[in-house]
Image (tube, rainbow, N blue to C red; front, side, top):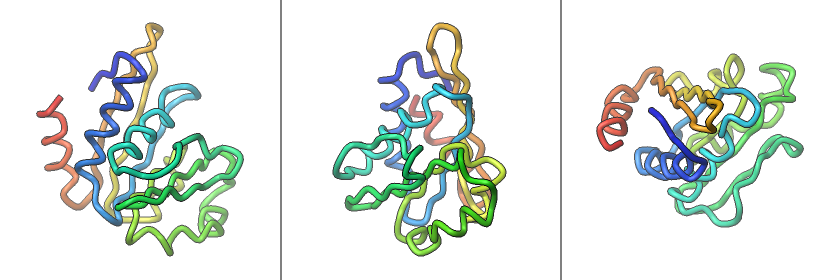
Length: 149
């Protein structure tokens, strides 16, 4: 899936939000500046959360309140699974959508069923989004999202 601009990336995040449910885990990976936070901003907008969605790099995790809360985590500075457990995210996973930037290899432990999105940024600033579902009904949800784009 191609997002030509940051606005396109955010718009896709808003469309994705319509497919998300309480307890969903979304794991984002990609190089610095690829658009992980922009995608999460779109998800937040689609979920109707209050307040601005910004990178949680220095606070590691933020909870954004809304009809469906968004837990936004930056795992970049985490040393591994133990530090992720120390954030005590399990308490909010069941009733929230949890999005983890830089979470590949760490965050999958939070749920057996999750959506992995790999983002690559091209020289022209377009972003390639590769969606991979793991478990649950992610294959069906991804197919529906791709059909809408």
